[in-house]
Image (spheres, rainbow, N blue to C red):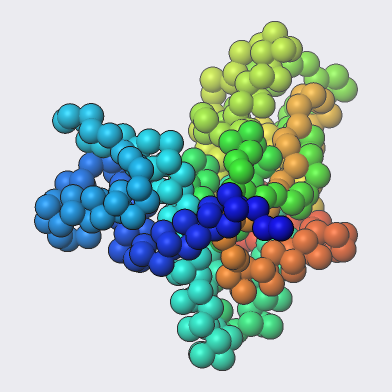
Length: 341
């Protein structure tokens, strides 16, 4: 015998869905972000009175309070209001994806793919996959998005970014996100200009490293933190002489122009050494960078192009292909005869 309470709940849900309109979802979703009726009105280019009327309609449909006034501080969503705003955001992204997919099918498979990378370690694999993808799917527009890790995570959550490649990070532990490992954890190693006097030493100490000129990673970067931590544990301060840069091409040029040290994940260091830009220093810093992962929003239907590309990257990563050991393009581009000093 059917549960009368379950039947009643389903009927109530169907009644709410039959009365809610797309504009209601947009308004409640926007209210969850900007928290004032005036700000929502500005977003949709309507009057605050029109927004207030729509908010009243939404509460009447749901039959329960969704927000409460906070005076000049705007509106605070209730638990029910927050739940509705979160689901409204997901539904709106889903509808956008549906429209994109329909348009892509009508155009013969064309579409868009939005990617971001926060680590150079994955670039050889990523670019190999992109070249293959461009050949197989020439009609898909691929865009590389730049930004800080927090900004890119927000774009994953709101559905505007398809896939992020980055080091594993606790900030990625969100209910809406899913990850897959692309590259394993790597040691952090020190490299030097090919003719650096330090390379002739039979024994190298932490104090010797600290007194050299460095290509110092930019403050705030993962590599800067690892270098700082490693040297601190060894009882020496960060190097004070050199150039602050996290750009691999600038670093490669500096390594050829003068006597410099640099620090990179082992994969990038090996590529620079293969390109004859640098040589590895026999010193163990004792640190490592986390595995590189691909991250995407699992709560929304992925764009067809994103699904295909994500699987292509995973297949490339699992193949163990030799292209992962190829020199970085940036390193090869700057390779030139070393200046005599």
